Image (tube, rainbow over all chains, first blue to last red):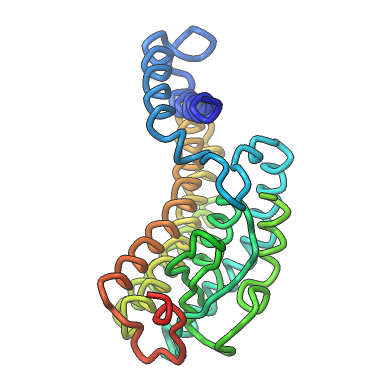
Length: 174
Length: 111
C-alpha cells in the first residue's frame, strides 16, 4: 500500500513538472490537476509493486530510497565520478572503434549488494562506462554477468572492472 | 553564446557519429551494443545540453519550459538507454548468440 502511494505521488510530481504553467490554479489548469491525479493513480496501481518490491529473503526493501539524503548522494555521484567515467568510456570506445583492437569476453562479478535498487544502479553504471556491458543478473546473489570489451583478467574482482562504483552504489542504496 | 552551442552540438554529433561507425566496425551484437549505447548516450547528452543552454539563455516562459522538458528527457534517456541495451544483450544471449572471439564466457556454465 505504501509502495502504491509513493509511486503515485512521484508520478504526480513528474506530471506537474511537465505541465508547469498551464493555468491559474497555482500554476496549473483544473484539467491538468484532474488528469494528472487520475493518471498517477493508475501508474501507482500498475507500477508500485515493481518500483518498490516487498522484502525478499536476504534482500533489503527498496523503500529505503525514500530518504532524501540518498538522492542527494545520488546526484553527487551522477555529476562527479559517473560523468567523468562516462567521458573516459567514450574516448575508450572511440579508440576501439577506430583501431579495432578488442578482446571481448563475459565475466562474472560479485559486488555483494543487497538491494534491487543498488544492483540496478550498478548495472546501469557499468553499461555506460569503460568497455563494459551488463548482460545478465543472478537475482538471488545479485551477481552480474558483464560483457567486457577488453578482458585483462578472466576472473576479476568487482573493483577491477568498475572502480569506485561498487562503493558508491553501496553508499547510495544501503 | 552561439559558439558554445555549436561546440556542444558538434561534440554531440561527433559521438553519435562514432556510435554509428561502431555498428559497422565491430564484429558481433555485444560489441556493437557497446558503441551503440555509450556513444549515443554521451552524444545525446551533449545535444540535449545545447538545447538546455539555449532554452535558459533565450529566456521567457516558453523557452524555460522547453529547457525543463529537455532535462526530464535527459534523465529518462540516462535511465532507459542502459536498461534497453541490457535487455537486448540478455535477449541475444538467451536466443543463443555467442560472443564472437570471446576469451572467456562465464554465462555458459550457468545456463
